[in-house]
Picture 1 (tube, protein in one colour):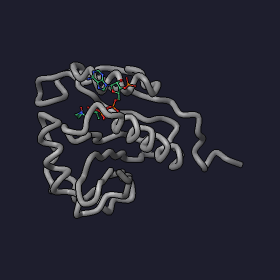
Picture 2 (tube, rainbow, N blue to C red):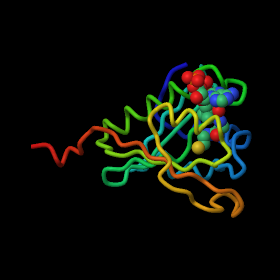
Picture 3 (tube, helix red, strand yellow):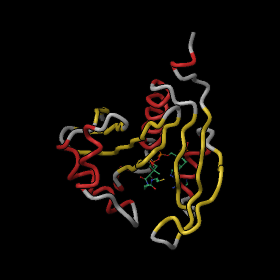
Length: 152
Ligand SMILES: CC(C)(COP(=O)(O)OP(=O)(O)OC[C@H]1O[C@@H](n2cnc3c(N)ncnc32)[C@H](O)[C@@H]1OP(=O)(O)O)[C@@H](O)C(=O)NCCC(=O)NCCS
């Protein structure tokens, strides 16, 4: 598997992975603005033409907010999510993020356990965040990086 930046060609398969991963999946169209957005950084894991996983974040000032992270169902539990998450954290640090945040369904034990293993902590709860039904934890990771504007 290799990691590459987001391209339009990935979107159809990403939308398929979204459907098997989430109650409120992003459609292909929802990803389109992400491809050329200056604030968005995505990493797509591919094997040949096949999309295996993807994750992305939006940079706002010194914070990176993770928008999506998913691994194709048939490829889960093999360490790919952890590999992807490490790559996203490194990219966010490269871009000067002091803090990385995300929302996760409070019942998503697998994802929560993965985030905690990277040092993310629950910072709050958003009630009925998903489908106006399910609660989300807001999780945050403080990084040690300094924004480039602070250097010198
Ligand atoms: C969450 C997700 C990205 C993890 O990817 P993955 O490739 O399956 O995860 P990995 O095999 O790399 O495992 C990473 C960690 O997740 C946790 N984990 C993975 N499978 C697990 C399981 N069956 N039960 C409990 N924890 C599990 C563990 O903490 C694991 O770390 P460890 O192997 O060192 O114990 C993947 O399950 C997924 O795409 N889920 C659907 C989409 C989703 O929920 N995204 C997160 C939205 S906020």
